[in-house]
Image (cartoon, rainbow over all chains, first blue to last red; front, top):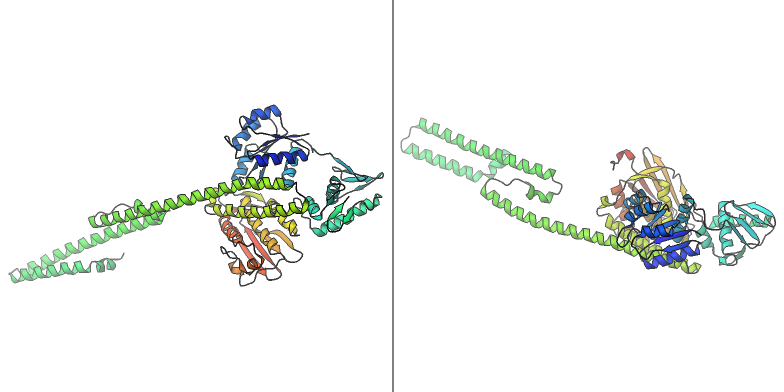
Length: 222
Length: 336
């Protein structure tokens, strides 16, 4: 499990962020004592540090430089200061990414994952999902059942992964669109329908024709 | 100041001098001075008077020219009285001192106003940063809620953010050079960021977003460009029609790049189109749909002006609206 250190002075954000990261399969490490953070980091050796800029005492910029000296872990700035000047300063001081508050939860998670992957951490989540007689390999984009396999496109993979992660629950169309909506690919309702039809076709070919059920007015269910 | 103006200004004094000379001449003539001597005397006197007037004239004109030059080269014109050499004669010096006192009072008032404006701006910025913390916390807390409530709350939080963002940029637009950072930026990044910022608004309204030809780079301030584009996306979402589609496309135009945001929304009536960039203008669409502040496009134009972006709008009622941002050629920009 990867350890993420949270350096944030707002208690509500700190606690919710810790909860969120825990649910996502990370081990959050909350800093509540803002004295000598580099020493605490050196002791705990986190895999990633989420760093606020407006902190009591020392500001995040100088802290970042100190942290970089103390440990090799990547530093991601999470701050409400949003000018280009701040961002350039943060990145030139050795920050690995710069996220401005208020961020949306999926964006934050995606950027954390990207930084971890870039710095050689590898994804924290399991690569293979299993539910409802299906076995999905996320990195290969392949689904298998009854000894047969089928290749999935990016969208089909995301849809199926979302349904399998919430197996048994109803997933609304809006949630699926929210999952698929990504950088440079903006899914609308029609695209979702098309992808859903294709996915069902592929699942039917694997011998699971009714795997994804439509719950009228509510969404889909695996 | 011309010689004629100078003379007409002194007409009374000149007339008095001439009359005095005439009277003196008459008196001398009557007391038996020879006419030849009189004429020489008259010529000498007239010459001295004329020379004195011309000397005065040229001195005044030189002084005025110097003052004008100083005023022209001054950045803050109201500091004029502090920067000019005091005049030589007593009367003018008194006047000058009065003006200078008045000027000082105004300088004080101006700097007080500037200070309070700066303080206000700083307060707004600090407030905006502070309000972002609870919004962030609320977003994080939201994710535990069930689908529909979460989406609705997220959309409302998005609205709050949009208002907060506008307040921040409104404060910044007062003296924009403080935060502006022009650098090479990918159009794709600007568009992706703006779309990401309005993710829940766009998804909630079932809007299809298409991007086209965003491969280029421009020299601009990324945050500001994202803000401007975001305002356009918000407008497109608010004034959407049936089966809404927003197309963001770019094409080079010589050394410039034109970025167009096109929507198939309800459009803007032709007679309102020239006024959409006015501060507080909401128009019939804004009134009928509500939630319009009349600030979005006003701020866009203000910020675009500072970034030297061209901002044009065209629209047809019932068919849609196209807003074009023209990014300047990079050679035009002063190096930072």
